[in-house]
Length: 590
Image (cartoon, rainbow, N blue to C red; front, side, top):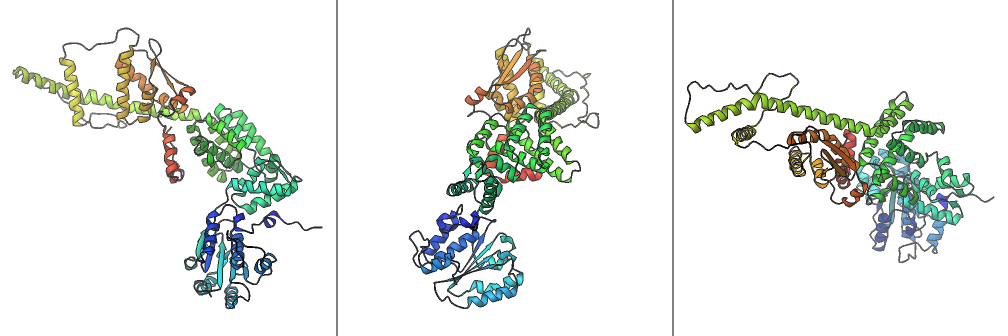
């Protein structure tokens, strides 16, 4: 019976050209050999299974090769290469620091360094998991590492660079290995499956690549296990079953349930997931990743960040097209909070179900919060306006006007007494907050009231119930000016780009391009109608806001950005903003 060799060993790269996902390392090493600028010590850092020890062996083989090619690759024909391939070379020594981490082991290594190679150019010492050495062993190694013999080269490899003392780091040329991209891992598995004549599905290989988390060795181990499990026919469902991964289709269904506010379907589907043996924390983690992928799919420029197959990428694009950004950002925040609470919750199932209920009614919650904020803001404005007109401005304005009239007529009556001026801080409830008006605002108000009283022609009023289009435009321009003064730039820009239309005698229609714009206008609807009623002196004014997707396509270039879109734009330039938002548990104002 022939011995089975796992794929990680059978297809281990033997040349720099075969190394996957580390071009910055392999090219630097090849240039160093070509220009004869090799350092005396190298430190290869990075996560497991990305090629640190493999690159160390390839480097050792190329250094001692007698006939290097123009591409700086080993020839595999000279005596040095043949002995290396047969594990019979005396010029390459490998030491596992995890089991040889004492001072005596390092001293024995230093004693070997004293002897020059009998054949070949260099003696290479590869020390794997070097962070496991004790501090005493590190200190014993310092002098030899700094000034080794001219024929000795040390290659250290570690997965935990922070555990190595600084004096060792300063003596080494450090190379950082990256996690291998999902696409590269999937392509590598596809090539191996063709060589081994194993049937595979693209989605299945992508899931294996994602599960490996950038470690190619882990991906090859899973590939071998599933190929044995499926009798050399790796399918999507077989991978899900073998790796205990929840099907992506569940998350697409849950997103649709959230948008349809279908709590029944959510709870029944979650019960189905639990019946299959999946834990709630795994479900929440997968759902958060799904929402993140939908956010990424919102823009064609960020679509490349999706580490999925082409079929799955199309499904993400389709669902992202009709899912609002405001919903996605609030949803991922709710899921993250639920993940944190899940660990300490006694009733873990209820914790997840509560999060699902919140997600189902997320639209209503956001609308309710915005409406309550608008009502509170209106109440504050009304309170301030009442105090300002009744208790402050009226007596002051009356006094100013009476004084100016007396000076104009040059007749001062000794019996005339000025109206009593109430103090600025009038008696009010303890909960009423009052802001002292500025002098310029008082003067402006006084001048306006003076002009209104001294004007011979009464102000023109709108007669009848029908709205006048020209006067409506004028009133809306005044309202937009007020919005800009209050720094509500998003609403003002929406009204500029989507101007209201006079539908009939007392109905006003606003057709916008997106749901987010509609939500902003609905939050402002009550204030806008009250302003127009006062400005136009009408008792009945109806305001309707509708969404037209076709108009969104036409006005896409000139539409105003929502707060969430502004945040995403800034987060592209500085990814730390998202980390700051998560750390502070902030919520965007949509």
